[in-house]
Length: 544
Image (cartoon, rainbow, N blue to C red; front, side, top):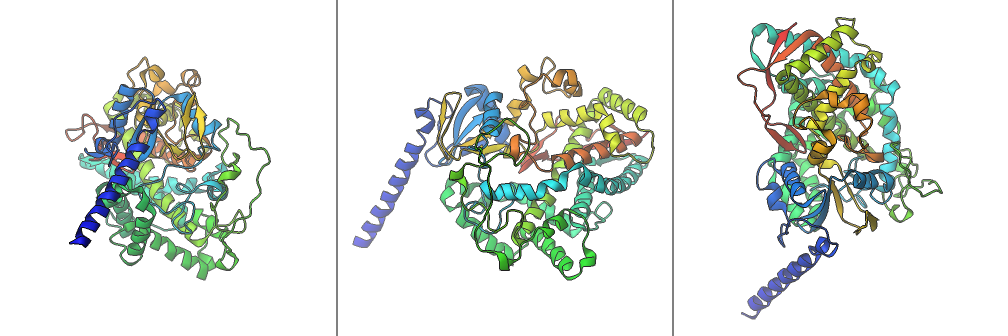
């Protein structure tokens, strides 16, 4: 009896302590005079954000309309400052990058300060991020992109043949799925030397495994919610899943992707003739062997700690107070084997999914806005003389194609959920005191759909002419940030932009896309880490 009473009292005491601690923490924004929705002591505002499918970006937009361009909400006990004020965003992402250099933690990830495994360029921080970015940046120079240009053209040849067959059959097709297989084909070979026949073989095992990773993000409630409610167990839960993943790759398909990359690494280490000038080889050339690992990083830093407003990556310094763990190797330009595997997985997954989604969304808008499609056809017909190919230099001679690209990502900021930062040390912006540990989340939908910025034409209307140089150059530099901003912007943005333009230019040279009975009047979007058309993009392909 005594034991029962003791345990009950102890449990109630712990619960009361947790309740009081969270309620006190959730006073933060009120104490700072920042408006926002009232949080629940346990889940904060997670119920409003996730009670309905694909509701996150819609809810942020509703709150922005209600509370203004700067407000606070809570993910469980974690404070999040949501912003759509462009000057504020510029302060966080560029001018004070040294203070806001870390990304918001994902629901489930390793500890960026202590973990030796599972860290990549997206979730890394401090010196480790700086090291990874410095090593990876050279893979996306103009010279490197030109090397893979012929490969992209050859993969588009296959796509054009498949679209020609669809045109001859006069049937509606899901072009989003076609683009997924195309971009997977490009990334598999360009980045890792994996020859894929996925455009013809839709049951390719590696492709299906990669697709399952995104499906799991949407469906796995354990991964999605528990770390929000109890962030203290985030890193421990990741270790458990890591252990399960090593023995049950079917349960967590991300580990099957890593396993495939590890196979390629092992093959190249045994047979140098298999090496090729791709992204994986570049990282392998920077690999540090375990014999030289000592758990420390020696890296030199600039004496000047001042931050400058610049878009140049990696040149910003990290304050000395944040130069902890952050890397595991003696030399700043080496990678660990696990870093290569994890980084390769991130490139593989992000590289094909985001570009294919952008292409699908662009075709949807062109099919439902035939006057814009006609204008793009006219530009391509006039400026592209080769019927079967396109050169790297020709991409820059297609201004309307560039406008279509930018307008598509304005309407649909695909990676909106990862445009965020964490305040690493207390700071003040626009008179607002921001304590360390507060996350900064950009409300991308409100930024990209703001009538004051993008008017007078309705921001919900597809209008590529918004990006004509004489208009766009006068806008705030933070008005269009689908790839993020500042030193931690998307490292692969140039590759994604190039691939998008090559594919769209070549297929528009050959085809017209028209809506059909199966085409949605308004696309239903799903949130799977990035936004994507939930039911695909179904149109008819007509040969020109």
